[in-house]
Picture 1 (cartoon, rainbow over the protein chains, first blue to last red):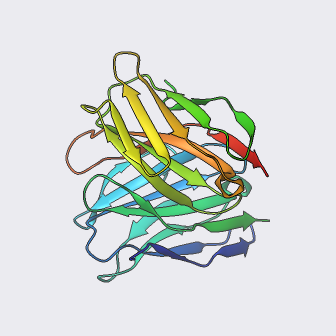
Picture 2: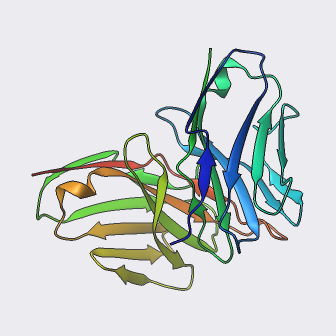
Length: 111
Length: 114
């Protein structure tokens, strides 16, 4: 069964460093998302992406964040200068119709 | 406004018992979805119910939706220890164009004791 994959599973970085989180959505899906979950808190929407452009972003998704679909398969989330409060699980999701399918997540730890 | 608030926050039952979790929301929705998350792991899609549906079944799962009360329930029958996880409801609203973001609740932590 096709699934969303994410790499790395765990990323540790120093404050101020850039990180790129990678996702491979399900191949025939057209809509892509990033969410994050700070430890013990709700899963929060960050950004949605369709037809090679952002369709909606939350107030969390400030100019330190960017997304890209550099080729036909990968979907990346870049954080330019990480802060301590960016430490969270980051989930990628994709959908074709109504159900969103989530990847296993990347745990980002900012020291 | 907060969307998708589940209750109870935690539920502990014995194997074989039924588990019922509730979710309330505040705005209109297109559909409501339930997800499971094992500790520190990803979100697994369980079931989707559309705003024009009242009840849906999938295996041991039964979901109801009452749009007049803006609430949903997830029933897991004949629970197993492997059902131990956090369960989240997520509401989907098409806010225009292609967007269909999910708004999650805080979740119910279900513990099924063997």
